[in-house]
Image (cartoon, rainbow, N blue to C red; front, side):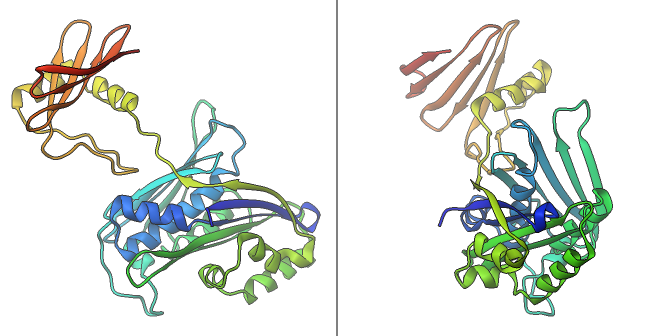
Length: 331
């Protein structure tokens, strides 16, 4: 089953809800970052929350970033999502290993420690919205529940979970966010609290074969649940050649020249998807008045040459130490 999110309302608009299954994107993140089980659980939970919070935004170009920084061994997490269901993220120390907590579960709270949760919403205004709260438990779901209550004054129930297989691959991942809208009656609040107290964990329900629709039906089925939308979600990183070029240009002519003079190996790495140049690559930059030429060499061939000029740039694949040009494109 592919990952997806559903959006719903209940109690004649007094409740809005989101639920997601995110096994595939969490497994993708695990493989991309080679995360330990506890890091996979932490990152998977925040990716799940991020993709649901992302689709709450209205603008096509709106971007949501969630950052957790703590004094625990994992250091922190960063997740970025948009309104179209795309999400990406990484753990600062993805290889951290910890024993289970007192409940026999992966100790996400112990991995994150004491710290701060920040939610940054770039919705096209002059300055992005930034909300911050302390970590209440470090288990992420409780911390986001606290964030909604204190920073956005929206009573919410956040549930997130990642279940691992014995071979450390992802068995199940998903979650839900249920929020009370202004003016919700005491009867609806009491009924929702009772339902939430009766259900099993998200991963238990998913592992029993329940879908996001089933989960929301279990919780809100007696309150006039109406599912209004379904959207695919995925781990997607928009890093590209063009973004790398801009990053290299932003370093500045002097710094690029210093790299050449030092003769040190330089790699370009994306934190979000972990794509990188091989460690045996040598970064060569030639700077002139109007252009910067960037070349990545391997032992017996150039694998990529990018020329950036005022008006154009080109790529050339050169085999056997620049002797033969294999392909040439201009843009």
